[in-house]
Image (cartoon, rainbow, N blue to C red):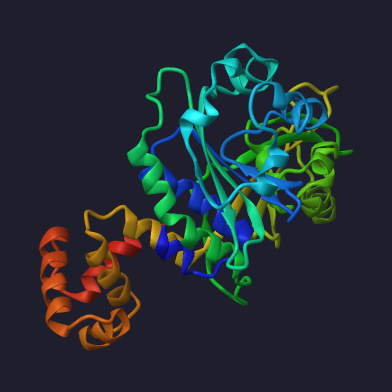
Length: 360
């Protein structure tokens, strides 16, 4: 978690990675981050997994700072809450399970319990809230998990307050989320979409908001779907039942990272049927983020992972010791244990092992 926070990624790239890694720290069903202004007004949010636009719109229109107060403290109370974790007991009152909020918003999405953390900057300004959800059948959150979450909040808050910018010409790799797809007509009418398409397109705009939820899909993702149709038409590649259709692709820069899109014109089997276009979308992430995920997958202690990270980036053992503020002997001991644990003999072998765990 702390290594991710030190990468100085843009917030829209950092938040999904943090929510993903939180599952290793505190197991949960799905995680969410709310961006707020200093008055605790919800600006936008990122939610893991598919977003049900109907339920999200219902929450904004009927429950946010209104009907939700019948079941739990209103969202606006964040303005007065100190930074830190709100205990699960405080948020798990019995009235929640009798409320419309639970039956119309929570239950359809599989939520049953939650743990919330309030994030504030160094000057005390409200940055947002982090929410972890568990589903029916999961154990309640306990005090030890609350403490673990609290231990990383200062690092997350500092990273959000001091976000970097996307690096020019940085190499990108496919993010771990599966590709999303949309089936549409040549004139832009959408027929079918995969479950996570809405989430992906709204993330590419910075996160879900009431405004984005009301927009047509064609207008999200900086207009990547119309752009793909235009490029497909311009390619002027005729498609018939006895020809092999060719795909066209483009990469669209977004705040959440590049969005790689591929469009394929599908030939109809019936002469009277209209051709359809299949567009596949996948978010790309900075290579340095993929390296951190690969490091996290290795059977290493935090200290060994820190040394492994420096070795991967080409630093000598003396340089690693200076960069980490430890003795060279400590680094030598870590290297010996890393090599034994991973079955490698040299830094070059180690680099090859990590590279083999990166997405293609």
